Length: 428
Image (tube, rainbow, N blue to C red):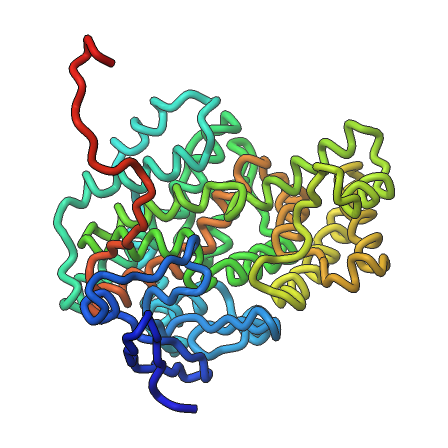
């Protein structure tokens, strides 16, 4: 393959270099396009064919169903590592040694106390407020209590900012849920691991000691790992473009949380449960709804099946299906919603219409089932997604700043009115 791309516009021909990634991905470097062509730009709604950066964090091949963090297979990480190890690898580039992991965890615990004024901000929200709006606001509010900007060229300052948000964010997540549930706000324990502390802070009742269920802990660990990063998706791109203005880490994360909120992104697992509730209210006939999903003239949309990036299968779903089965078996829950989910899953896995189109249950389908079985309110599902995505966002923000990427400034094609005269209000 030539290392040059040629573009013909009318009588003029232009050449642009090709950029090749370590996995043989190829891009046309068009940063000089506008200058060379005297104003011509590309247009790519949704940036589906546009690379916004060069990144060494996550590799994703949707055609082959491949997902890797820092070169490590998602299958191996989910099987052999815990969430904090994966977080460290994403942020710092390598899996930690025992000493590095212990220090990372200890430093996170030291920074986990949240200023009590943040509690007062939380108390000001009505119970009707959506948890994602609360989480975004509280994350942004942390900036007020940590006003100094991070010197990205100082490893010490960067490290301190990272352990601070890794420590405080799970507290904000737990408090957001407990506020919604009317439970007293609490903290974790220095004797527990990172994920165990998340569970304790979320689920501990005020009148009894919380006992960790290892199967639930393992499932939550895997879910957080599977959600930890996913290349340049909507929320990650938002974090990077907000940070490109040199907005601070906490402010950029708050922007990412808001982007994740949408039902076409992180809100997909909430949409799955809302769909299951609607099917239950209509009698719970899964065959009826699978037929509706196959009918092109029916507006019904089957949530949690297929994926806009993975064209073959979602490798994360393969991993988390096993965990979902183990959780449901261990808890022995009899829940009509979960029975409907099982019915839809079996229909899709055995119906040629779905099999031929590779419309398999995806990670959002199984994560919604697990979170419901764990007793997490449906409005909190996207918050849990944000908790898992935190280290990916941090890694992406850090990489963008260290690479000194320019401020994000997409172009546009103007389709409005041409120049026209102003008319006074009497003549309009």
